[in-house]
Length: 314
Ligand SMILES: *Cc1c(COP(=O)(O)O)cnc(C)c1O
Image 1 (cartoon, helix red, strand yellow):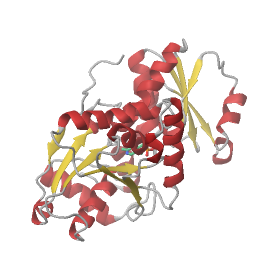
Image 2 (cartoon, rainbow, N blue to C red):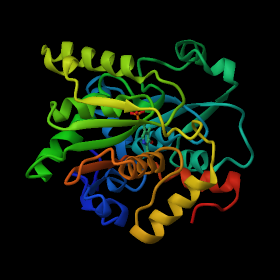
Image 3 (cartoon, protein in one colour):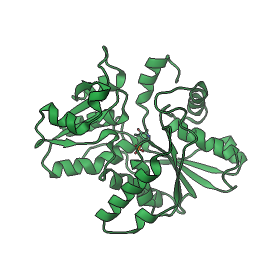
Image 4 (cartoon, rainbow, N blue to C red):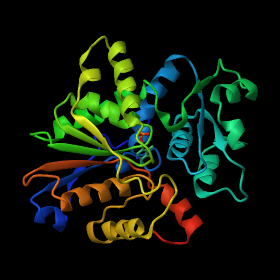
């Protein structure tokens, strides 16, 4: 439905010395290359939602997000590519000029409506009070995670099985809402050990992911996925949550770009690669282990991050 998507997303081997030192083989699945602006897991989560919207005869999307949201950016671009109207409810006050994420969204034709943090909280109410015609709008949740996000993310797993003769021992992915890892767990059908790296403070993912898997299993009338247990969430590498910045993480991003030509973003993917490298150094992985890291995209966020904090990321 959208042209010029790079699917399946390419995989590449990453020859990082510290990994070789410990006999660990690192691969990366470049979801960031799927599309210039509908990149990574945000495309995966949108796919079946867009098909559903079309089936319902809806040609307008409404969604929610923070001012630097990868999801807002992707929805605006997807709407533009499809010729559909998009409306984004944005948490927080409007800035003048708009930050790069929102300037892009507006340039893609997205209507932006700004809400205070307290107004923003209750999404149902925001929609009810907005006066938009719900016969025409398809609602995407903040971050894009809902039941229909799972089959799209499961396709990451299906591709991995086709791209590797023998599936990797571990698949690593970062987690915000948990939708991406839930779909990936389904797609891998317990064939690899899946490690989620939480980018947020706190230990709350387990039940959310279980619920997503259960709902999806019920829908498909099958039992397995809700009981699959070869996955875990690591909560050690959140670096304080969204939009915090630590110099060591910035240096790490610049090093990966310069030495391994792998661009990472400071909110999600850098934490994943940092966590993996730290676990390698701590000999968490046995020699001859193969790891596939999912690069979920999010690179659009770098521009806004640099604008806020000074030009830190090269
Ligand atoms: C949104 C996002 C995530 C988090 O995905 P969830 O499905 O919410 O867990 C991870 N990485 C990037 C780059 C993202 O934009």
